[in-house]
Length: 292
Image 1 (cartoon, rainbow, N blue to C red):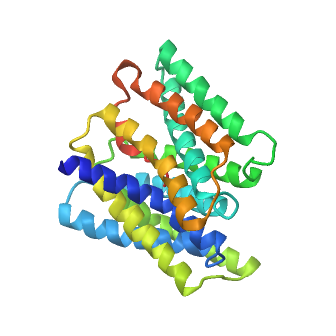
Image 2: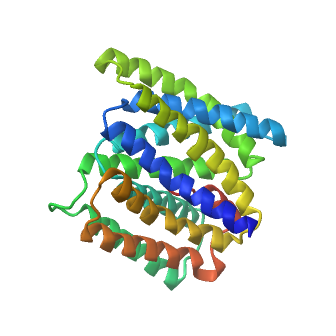
Image 3: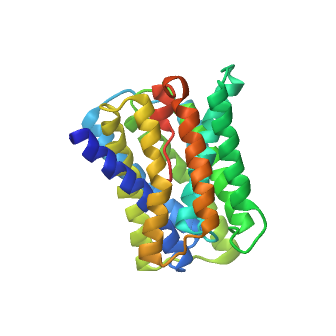
């Protein structure tokens, strides 16, 4: 019961991350750099507090800086994408890019996929093609590209984090260091475009960093203690449709037939790929977070 409750809470937090970012940026309450900086800073504080209470072994300083660069790239691209695309579309593209990056890394490392895995990958790629084909319901191309790159960056961040010690401590170190390039980006945005940050935007950024990112990750890692690797991967399939539903309810965003069809192909294909031969290794399931 506790594992189920923690898992549900973590999935809701991950879906809300997309909603909070979209609400702040599409509503004109914050610019992408300011939102990113506040999100990373508040997430770093919360994760540091959780990590301090738990102890654990973190990554080396050099490894943490490399991970911080990948984390910063993810967070900034995530914010830039949500200037242009809806919460549901963004969550779906992010999830697909993260999972495909992780699976692709496994292929490069010498994994030999089964027919079921190849079929799942083909279905997922077909879903991405369907979602991005020209047409009235196609998401903004620049926004879609930014979110796909954000997913690839998160996939790289996840791969770097494998075996680096306690995941909460590792994330705390990476978030703290990622604030440095985020501040640089904020200064550059300030010089080029000025700062746009309302009290509501600052509150949304803080909530995204402290609660749906920082505490969300801590809850997820606690839930993983009671989840099998396959279950951990498959349960994340709930995040994109949850984000789309919340976006429709809270932000009035539409859910097109194209998005529904692409979701079936992408999520179904990934489910098929990750469950083949008993599912992914636990380290991949642990690190590959959806929607972030």
